Image (cartoon, rainbow, N blue to C red; front, top):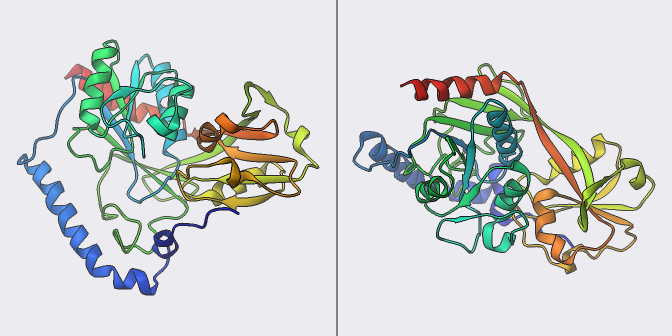
Length: 329
């Protein structure tokens, strides 16, 4: 049986008895967050500036909104624009606390699931660390040709100075509009950033639209050879997703004509083989983020669905214009 959606998340996207009861705690969190941010803005707490520009990709809510596919898109476009990017990430639930480089094929229990996907697909150095500034310094020391850092999920990590901030939002919006722990917000929606990218959310003036497009399906045991979708039609398919919004993955499968029995799991769920024991099952489909955690015990009919971000190609010009301006300065 799939793991249930986490208890707080069931209350974050509606006003419930629990979210109302936690409203005083949310006010205290908001006060602490505003004080901390003002201390950095005033210079009382100092942010560390790296020797190259830093682009932050994050979100205002807890949970995934499509940052990993966006970071892959952005680093690919930066490389096409003659930049040499590197990626820094916290590595959610990673065992490594100190800065370290993430190898392709690395253990997601050690490095985190998203950094492993980034290392395998980006073609650029990926470093993780609880202290993103220290991870950035270590990356630059190891890869001195790198001339821009893309920080995955670092919007609230004020200790790392940044030159361009991008917030990703998805169709869930800001939930019940309350801050942690009463709602999903990490910061107030009024928080200013340089660009807002909407992943499946209704358009708003001054924002950029993104969608996730399936670009291939492969066996976990044989990732180098994609299979045709037609090979899955007519089979009894189950799908699992341990991401911020599992329904988004299931809708993607439906959009390419695959009918599945859906099994949502909490974000970053640590899968075991027992989680994937389903009766009347010919094949299991999962996200790449989940696949890196399952390939050590994968069976022949387990498949990963690869998606890619699609945006207006002009968006990268907005970022590179700022970066070129920094170089000139």
